[in-house]
Every structure is written in C-alpha cells, then in structure tokens.
Amino acid sequence: MEPAASSPSRARREASILPLGGAGRIPPQAIELEEAVLGALLIDRDALTKVVDILTAESFYVEAHQHIFDAVTLLFGESDPIDILTVAQRLRKDGKLEKIGGEAKLIGLSTRVSSSAHIEYHARIVVQKHIQRELIRISNEMIEEAYDETNDVLELLDKAEQNLFNVSQGNLKKNYVGSYELVKQAVIRIEEISKREGLSGVPTGFKGVDRVTSGWQKSDLVIIAARPGMGKTALVLSMARNMAIDHNTPVGIFSLEMSSVQLITRLISSETGIGAQKLRKGNLDTTEWQQLTSKVKRLEDAPIYIDDTPGLSVFDLRAKCRRLVAQHKVGIIIIDYLQLMTASTG
Image (cartoon, rainbow, N blue to C red; front, side, top):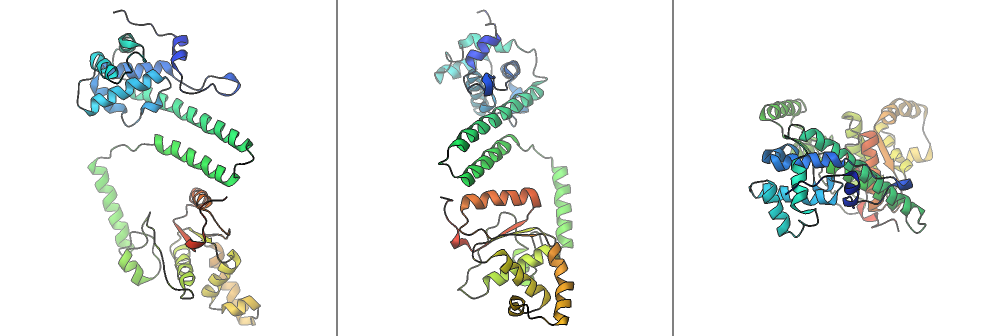
C-alpha cells in the first residue's frame, strides 16, 4: 500500500475543529508537528511516556489526529502493543478508521519521522498552538456575549476569568518529583513549623485555637456559628488583626452586614483600647487622640482588604477572591456573614 502524501490543502480540509479566526484568518496550528508527534508514537511505543503529561486529544487541531491520539492512549492504557496495525484495528473498532483517512493515513504518519528523539519538543509547540486557539475561542465568545445587552456584566466577567483559569490549569501539569527533592522539601517544612511553635497553617493569634488546629490550613472551610450578639464578628476581626499585623498574612474580608468604615472602626477600637462609642462620637481627650495617632499606624500598614458590597453573589465572590489572591497574595478569606449572600447577580 502506497503511503498517502500529506499536503497543506488536505490538512486544512481535515482541520474541522474551529471556525476561521477574525478577518478570515486560519487559527494557530502546527499540523506538520502534529503529524511528527503521531508518527513518533506509531514507531516507538515508549514515546507516549514522554508526552502523556503534556498532550491531550484536544491539543491537536486536526480532528483525525485527535482520534488517532485517543486510540494510542487507549492501547497504552490497556498495555497493548502500539503500531500501525493495532492503532488501525482500534480505530476500526470505534468506527473512526475511515474518518481519519484509513490505514494510508497511519502509514503516511509513520514516515514523517525516523525516531521519537524530538517528540517532547514537538509536543510542546502543539500545546502552545492549542492554548492560542483556546484564547481566541474564549475571546470571540466574550465579544459576542459582551454585545448582548441581556447578559449580566459581572457574571460575564466571572465566566471569562473562569474560562481563562481553566485553560491555564488544563495545560500546567505537574511533573514527578524524586524522593531526594521531596525529602529536602519536607525537612525544610518541618524546620519552619518547628520555628513557628508547631503551626503549619495561618495562626489566629488565639493560642488555644492554634494548639488544636495548628493554624488555619489552606483550603479549610471554617464556619463560626453562634446566636446573634455573641461576638462572632468581634472574634473574626481579632483573628484578622492578628493574622495581618502579627503574622503579615494578607486578609480579605467580605462584609455583607456592616460597612467597611464600621468594620475598620471596630478594629481601631480594639487596637487602641478606645471604646467604640467614643470613636463613633469623636469624644476623645488629648491623651486618647495621641493614643489613636500612635497606635493606628500599624493598622494602616496592615494587609487587610475589606469589601462591603451588599447582597454579594457567589459569582461575584469567586471573581473578587481570585483578584485578591492575584493582586495581594491574600492567604485567608473571611465572609461576614454567609447567609446574606445571594445565588446570582440577577
């Protein structure tokens, strides 16, 4: 059987994944490198281990190439041999052999390279083109939806952020780490915890709480529940103050009940020892004014960020949290209080 010649025009006919880009442009793609990657997989079974953490079927621009990669990974997962015959058999079983151009297509791919030496380099370029296409797709969708006056702008913003986040997460895969490096990291972490008196998380400043929890841990959801007027807000504000001032941990506070000025006034009261009632009335004597001026400086410099948007939605919260983490490296989020949140911005 004669190998099928591959031509740019034929490749474009097969490339039916995305519509043309703006101004009639072809979306970013590297069809020749896709063929080189697949050819390497067909002639070297072990080649897949070099790119399995880099590529997915969606990384390929040409639909036929997606089907072939799927077939290769299925065979690999079942510990079956990977060659032209087995891949063809798998595609035939799935009813996709004719869709990809038959066995001639596979034979043609196998002649594209003589070895798998450069497969990882080629695969990374294929992934780069895929990311570019995804960014174009997301941008086009956002443009269309932004022109639609019925769409909620904040929900649209959250959707855009989520889509971009998904592209990033889907293409940043972690590699394995050897025990030598892991042991070093673990020992360093143990030493750091030892210096922090056994605290592996964010200290609250309350020794009893920290002794039980070792500090608030990343990804923990902590709910402080009590009857009204029992001091829930005062407690979390004290924790926020301790974390931000004493331990230099940026804190994000979403206040759905009190204004940001009211919250910061309570923090000023706690920091200076001046009663909240006096601060509200401004009825301070000379000593108290001096006390206010000298002690409020630490609070001014504290990495505390307060958002008092009323009726905050889950969509809004998620978008705001992402921005707080990206811009200010916030280590903990406080919501006061959860029941006042809404399901959507609509």
